[in-house]
Image (cartoon, rainbow, N blue to C red):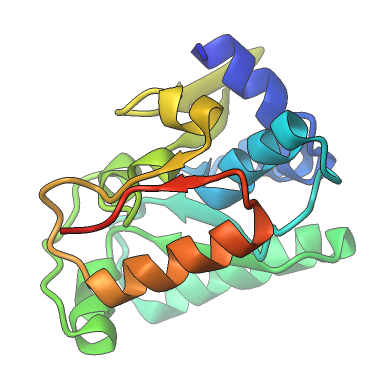
Length: 188
């Protein structure tokens, strides 16, 4: 699968389109719609399921050098006010401040990031390392590992990432229950 085909599949979900458009209007710094909501929409189209089947939430990453909780909370509240009518769970995170809370929450190190796409690079699974945002009249897609795993319905761990094997197994099992066609590559 190429970027054009992936984008066409991901944008079949009107929630994805609405969020991407709102992020563009708000002009948040380095803002992307990321991860599962994009990939799972593609899986749903490929497997003939309802467009929103299995999508637990919609993740937004942005990168603002203001790493205060107050600044991030203001962005979260603004997005909730502007996107609440969609009726979905939206998770918004300033990637400039993840290193401040991640080690305490997950008992794993997390280096400071320099841009939102650095957060995408740190996803647990390779197939969800994807982000989409508006760019001019079109869209920009970030996908360091491409889209072959998405098209082939393969879930594989992010190589070289220090992560919890238990968290990977839990996520993969949840997805396998929702999309039995998936092939899950075991974490080593």
